[in-house]
Length: 368
Image 1: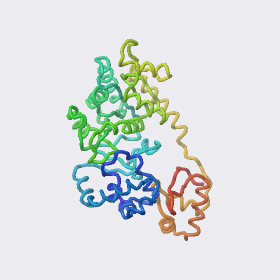
Image 2: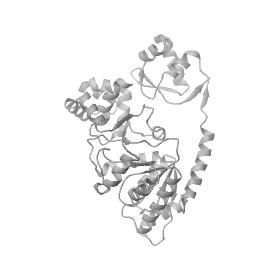
Image 3: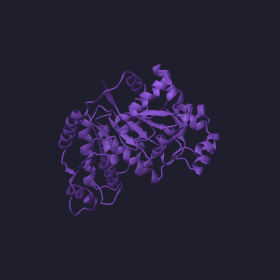
Image 4: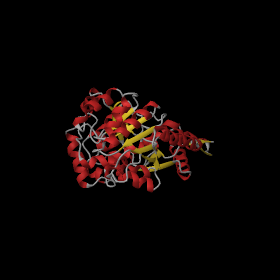
């Protein structure tokens, strides 16, 4: 799909505040290149594109030089990774509502390593700061990916502590990865860019806005196996991240706080509701090891019986839509046999038509 990368960047890279909605129009149209070539009337016929949205696309397209903009991105040392790219984090691609693409500077969190998100209050107490330093240092020392939002307070404290012993530390931003926010965390931002990694679903022209941070939080929890809450009020952005983590089926661990401390009301409530109370990094490692064993048992691919034509077609399907004609060319099968195989794969639940003769793979399995 290299030929589409610049068009994918055009689609993902302009300033937009709902990037989670970008994938469906591309799947419907067949590719971002086709979207780029459509006029206003054609765009309106694509599911998810309103009249106003179509007008905005047409207008912004006039000011977007496909080649120059992509070269500008590369010159800034920023990687653009669409969802079909093999570098796209597996923990993220397996999460409903994952971004169409991510922008990164530095490294990406490895899917082969345990991963913990450390989150908490911006205006944290000295107790919270001490615990964030402790868990950040200890978990990083165990080789765990430490994920957070580079925010004031718990997030930033945990990441700075982790960076002293490890380079597996990652900041998830609510703006373009070329923008340091908050500005006061410039030193942490530069360290993450140099030693760890920065990640965002927002393009380089996207400045920080309050409405962008709640969607950002779903990426923090998606990249983690365990979300560790160090300090949080009952009503806070931290609790929004916890809700997202629970919706994603993630484990939530909590550092207990004093019952009289307002900054611990959220933590203590989570413990009452069944979250794991942890007092040391070893408690979190125990949770991670249990998850590893459980996931290992589930990791065997489902075996599905397929005929020869079906196997050929299945092996040439991707998470990114391909047309019947393209699949026919890749497999060497004529159109009729290709369509028959696609229909059978649809019945078996491993492929899906996204519209207008374009198909995607929707489940990994072992053909037999």
